[in-house]
Image 1 (cartoon, protein in one colour):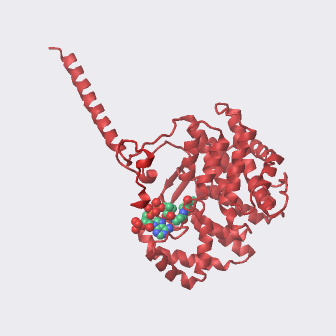
Image 2: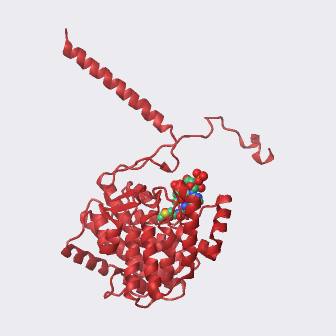
Image 3: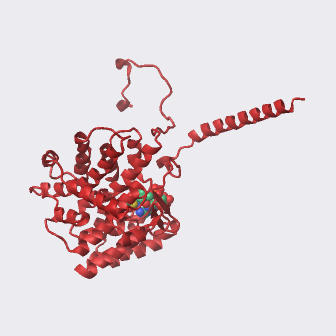
Length: 411
Ligand code: ACO
């Protein structure tokens, strides 16, 4: 008796069954529509971890609260992109390189002068970020030097471009970066044309840390999809900026302030929420696909807001925001909807004197670190993104000559 042969045949048959069932399962899976890819893993990543039920967020294993307390934005960006905290020499080199590349070409500035002054700064940023690809278009994405230089350039130049558009749309010439100022202080200087209080710069730097990365959100997914085509990193960042601009993503922080102002006083918060919920309007700055508790970044931003108010004076809208949070907790808390990162960030930026439509570009200044980390990771194990669809259109049908067509408008 050929036991070995029988065994082999049995194994082969079993394998065929497994493969067949895997094949059937795969076919069935393809028929399951997952709008927004909710709950569908599409990549492996070692950059950021979110525990949405406990409200924990880590970058490369370090908790967000520790990073905001101990690190700087540039150090955090280094950690995100290269995977480990830099040693002192690496940090000095990285800071020096970023400082050296802060200026943008006069050609980019001249191009920005042609943008309509009434255009949204996110659109200005998307176009200017994409334009960098014209200057550094070599797609040498297998060359570590090219990758390092692209990282440095994007982190260095994006704040300069955001500040430049702010001055240009006011009819002024952009001012040059100041080499004696650190990253956050220099941005505030380029934006407001005066050197800010060190506390303001420190708080702003912490805001950048808080917004630097958040796993596979819409803009990061967009960055990875673009990266998967092996295009240049400037196109990767430009596509992510475009995605971040939407009101369901980074754009929500502008709407939050508008909502707080509309509510106007703490005593109106309950009635406003009742009306908004009854008419199925989303409360801006609340809810998150990942968190079922208060976003840890919202708690830190609230502390930062309080720090600024203690030093530079209160913002009466803060009391309104707190009342909205309390009232919303009663109404939306049972559904796991709590303040997200956008809820308190607007109040912080407002206290720093930042115009409302720059809130999202500032988010982009910070998130470029996360996008670049994902760009590198995507290149490390690339497979072009190409999901499938469930076709719902007509079955093949016969061409109808123009004169025989019945206008659907007449029906
Ligand atoms: N206000 C009121 N109800 C809400 C809110 C909200 N902000 N968010 C979710 N819900 C409700 C929905 O109405 C829905 O209720 P239903 O099941 O009774 O129909 C339920 O919660 C699920 O809502 P979805 O929109 O399916 O939840 P999703 O996970 O897709 O939404 C999102 C996440 C887009 C962030 C959503 O909460 C939202 O639109 N929030 C307001 C906009 C905002 O603040 N965006 C910034 C997010 S953070 C960031 O991108 C940086």
